[in-house]
Image (cartoon, rainbow over the protein chains, first blue to last red):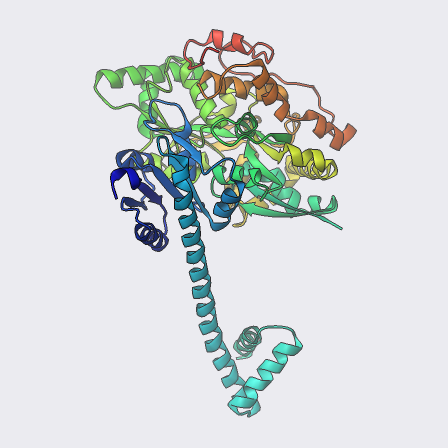
Length: 196
Length: 389
């Protein structure tokens, strides 16, 4: 791939894991010139030094406003940013905002070349959110298990139940009160703490 | 059946009327079920409003105008039926720059003409000594902060594009940047100047209201098309915001308002600092010096909530002066039409009747601003980037 076919892409993201996932995706797709920026201090001068063709930034990043300055015609700006995705392509804009990522194309690069990069960013950002959700769910499931085990122990001791019976009691209470077993278990722990 | 609305905001004190309207149930009483969405950048607020993820937003007044003119970004006509705040900004400088300005000052240190002239001497001295240009932070290219900073320094003979560097900085980074020496000063809204002063890293040189007595700062922004299709909802929203603005204005409610705004899901800073801001009582230096101004931030009284097209014209004039827009009668009319006192009046009737239809902008330098003679405004100021058409 020559320089002509591999635009320089700067990823501005404070999440190092997500930035790494994105960089890997871009490299797999044949984009060889990818640089990550995680330090927001003097972001603009970093960008000027790198002189990228495309800038990708996550939408949770307050530094996004800094990039707006690059739209301005001013002495400080060497190569103005042409646009934020394609004005006419509202589906793209919607998808990128939903995924939480935005891409800017720096003057000089043909806008058709942004589309595959943006699509890739969107899919990687979405994949990252799914991973994050899964991780959160696993964490809370683990946490719930610990709480349920402790609540079972309390019930076994106080009411002389077997482990099986304690679990059935927790589950039937949760069903009756339309709550999660974890919530019922947590209230047993809280109550037993109070009654100590 | 309640109307469900998504409204975006940036955690700043001038979002108060919106936040209080929702929190105190004023929107609910108007039949609106509002979900507030806290955002981290103006670019996000603008984009989410543009594509319809937000029905309305707390927005920089100049962004509403730039969006309607298609400047710097996608063109999307916006209307502003309600001003969320006038003024509220301040210019804060580092201790070193403050010392340098005071060493050169000739006159009252609270007079922006005197400080701007002193700044031009500081700039000249630095150039002679081979020091790099001073750097000032502001929040967005299309912001009252940018225009106030430029108007102030240019009045003293400092060219904001040639003699100093102006950089966009997100407000939460301002205090760190002045402490770290990346900027020598900045213009930002509340509470960020006070945060820098409380941290002992900056000193408030001017209130925004020293530069301009009345500057439209944040508006309640709505897409024009959506507004035209939903006039009842817009009117209900304006009434709720107006009720909140009046609530905030009552001195006995201020502590409650400060406590609401202080919550983490809203502005998330100390309630006492917010209270001082609402009362226009700001600590301006680390030694505890306090300065008071009734005009520092206008949320409710003095006709502040009613949009004034003259304000929009002034903002457009600054866009032209600094090369962001070309001067044209048509663009001027579009800019003025973003501010919609008619929608405000329709919603409020006699309750919102202003004391005066229009108030002067009240800039500290130059002739009185005349919205009918924008080129006359430039004629007075030698420094500017306005492009001939």
